[in-house]
Image (cartoon, rainbow, N blue to C red; front, top):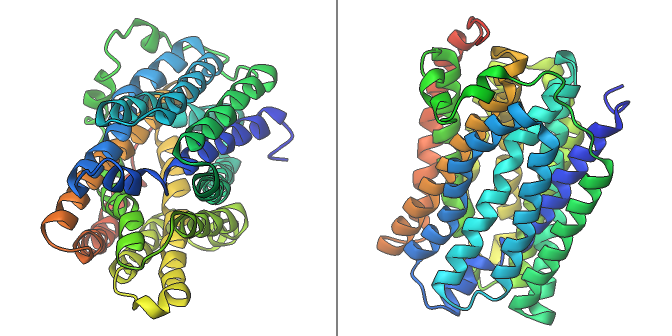
Length: 399
């Protein structure tokens, strides 16, 4: 059975707890920065992007270190940094403190690739797609509870307590991992041990077209999706007049869909649809969701907005675990920590680019523009992916 090894449950639960903390912040940050600190949408995009910039920078470093020293110490250290970031966030009444809090949070949050590598260490190849889907479900459930709780805490206790609650959850996560998480790396990577420049992974991966191509698809896809993530909270409050609590419920619904689909339904699709087509269909569904999200009439927000959210959630459920599983098949076991962390860093780079572009488009034009632009990009990417991914199926493992 997939969960015969209790360590798998621990790492999935660790990811879940970490994402609850992240989810607490999401419905609050954009409107707090714009409303209380009087910042523009472009600056809001930069604040959101700094988190992912740190993930991009530290993702390959942590992946390389985890291949050398093991997954467990990296997960413990980064989870502690995450808790500290939320304490800083609770006191962030200036732009500088807000940037510092999000930068620390990004460093702590750069461990997702390490968590994925942990799964690859302990799960046999035949069950990895399912295991990665459970990681996605942990993300989804974290984003159900986190935004919902964040909206309630903000409404009844205020901004600072959002940070306090997130910090408490993060430090509880550290305690759980310290007690229950065992080391998964049996054979340390000599290449990682000798490498003083983890960013050499980026250069090395360029020599393998299929791996580099998959990561390029990740970059473009996630950048388009990040335009929506960064600006939807502002759109829902300003254009649809939702409160922070209601915005939190919207994000909670997104997380609920991700949890339901990746926690159960995705297995049904994986048995019947090839991985290449799952990636293509994921692009198509996300494109439909992005294109329609900002055009729902105000008086029909809840029935119709939810339909487009379901499209995006299903598309993300198709895309994310499939991409991780494809990459894990294309690399040797010793390189999985580095390669999956590099892929996570590509996602992080996309979440740097996407919010900044989305914020600038929102500020310079109107609230429709980030969503339409993102949807159009993903639609083109669906066609590209269909033809390009044939090469990935023939790629030799990276040694």
